[in-house]
Amino acid sequence: MTTVSMTVNGKAVSADVEDRTLLVDYIREHLRLTGTHVGCDTSQCGACVVHVDGKAMKACTMLAVTADGADVTTIEGVANGDLHPMQKAFNDNHGLQCGFCTPGMIMSGIDMVNRYKADGKTLDETAIRHELEGNICRCTGYHNIVKSIQQAAGEM
Amino acid sequence: MHNTKYHKAGSAADAASLLSGADDGTVLAGGQTLIPTMKARLAAPSDLVDVSCASDMRGISVSGNTVTIGAAMTHAEVAGSSEVRAICPAICDLASNIGDPAVRNRGTLGGSVANNDPAADYPAAMLALGATIKTNTRDIAADDFFTGMFDTALDEGEIITSVSFTAPSKGAYAKFPNPASRYAMCGVFVASTDAGVRVAVTGAGSDGVFRAGDMEAALGSDFSASALDGATVDAGDMLSDLHGDGVYRANLVKVMAKRAVTAAG
Image (cartoon, rainbow over all chains, first blue to last red; front, top):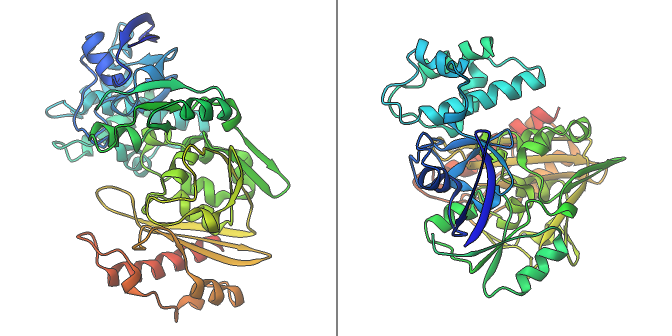
C-alpha cells in the first residue's frame, strides 16, 4: 500500500491504495466519482478520459500512484454552476444516445478545443474526427458528437 | 492486474539502482503498452520503476543539425517541439499520429523504442535516421539496436536515456494504419542525408522493423517516387495475418515508400 495525495476537481484528497490500483479505480471506487466510465479493458475506448495536470489521459492506463501530486479534473469538475459549454453543446446537438461514452467524449472535446486554441489552429470537422480517434461511441455514428464539439469550439 | 511494487525514479541512475534491487522489476515509462499488458495479466513484474519524471531523461536539445530527445519525452511533446520541427518535421509528424491524443500525452519515445513493437512508428524513424540510442551504460547504433520483433540489444536492467540523430536534408514518414487498432500495417520512413538515403519499414516485416536496401539504392541515384517503380519487396518476408497477407503488405511497403518520398519533396 502507498499513500497517494492529489487534487481532484479542486479538492485535496488522499488515500492508501494498492500500487496496482488504476487511477480510474481510485476515482470511481475510493472517491465515488462514478462519472468517469470504464468501457473496455484494452485502453481503446476513451470512456475513462480525465485531465491530469491539464492534459487528457486515459485513467484506465495510468496508476493512481503515478498521479500522486497531480491536479486531476473529472467530468464532475467541469461545470461551474451552469453546464460547461461542451456539456451544453452535447445537450443542444443530441451528441449522445446511451450516454456511456459521453464523459470521455466531453473530456477529450474540452482538451482538443483548449489545445487548438492555444496553438491558434482551426478545429474543423476533419480535425475533430481525427482527434476523436481514441474515443469510441457505439451508438451515434459520431455525427452529432462532431457537431457538438464544433459548437463548443466556437463558444469556449 | 497482479500486485506489484511501484517506485518513482528521480534519475536514470536512481532507476538502475531500483531495478537492480528488484526481484523481477521492469521500467515503467508512459505505460501505454505495459499497463494494458499487465491488466491482461500477460505481464506481472514484481516491481515497476517509473522513469516518466527522471530529470535526466527529459528534455529536447537541438545543436546544429543534431537533435537529442530525452527518452521520457511524450509523443505530444515531440510532436509539439517547434525546435525539432524547424529541422526535422518528419519526426514531429510521426509523433503526432501515434495512437490517439490521450496516448500521446503519456506514451514516451523511450518506451516505444525499448518495446520495439513490430507495428510501432518510432523504430522506423530511429532506423532510417541512423539514430544513436543512448542508455545508462553505452551508446547503441539503431542498426544494432533492433534485433527482431519485441527484441532489442538492451541488456537486463539497461535503460534508454535519450536518442540522438542528425536531421536529414529530406525526410518523411508515411503510414497505413490498421483501420481498427490504428497501429501501422505498414509505415515507411525515408531519410536523405549526405551519406545517402535510408529507408526503414515498420508494421509489415515478419521480424519487426527492417531497412529496404533495394529501395535505398534506387533512391540514392534518383530521389523520386518513380525511382521505386521497379523495386520489389519479397512477400515471403512480410507478416501475413487476417488484416492482410504477405503479398498485400509487400505492395503496401512500396506504396507507402513512394508516398514518403513524395512528401519528403
